[in-house]
Image (cartoon, rainbow, N blue to C red):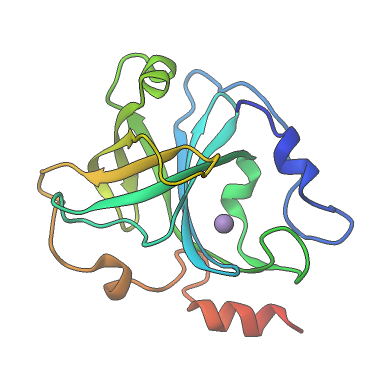
Length: 193
Ligand code: MN
């Protein structure tokens, strides 16, 4: 899944404002981007993205992240996205893939807590620290056996116990965009013209 072929094949870039993207290897000294986009498509979900090897590894999290280490949130692995997608907020035209409104819900950097990220991804257990505006501290993504007949890989996104762990509902407490400070419906209204 280290290619943008699938991402591009689903989109008509003459119609949608989403970036077409370019693949480039990570600069060694560069910090790795972390992004969560709140996406009101046919179903509301949160797209969790980690920059790795020049693309954004991506998971769709229907219920969004939880700060409570006792709560495991289902995260369906989806196709890699271009790094430029991490700056995208706005509306995807109806009828296009993922049509609906996208909010930049959180953004920052991430640091692997495993020495070998590719090996950790292969094994299905990636530990990392987030340094976003809303989410911080240690987390883990764990691959599961999967549900039903879904072809998508099922993972669980879980907060590790640290000083950023909490039972507070961060989705409810911090609903606004880190880019525009807007709510989802304000973004939808603003870009409809
Ligand atoms: Mn999405």
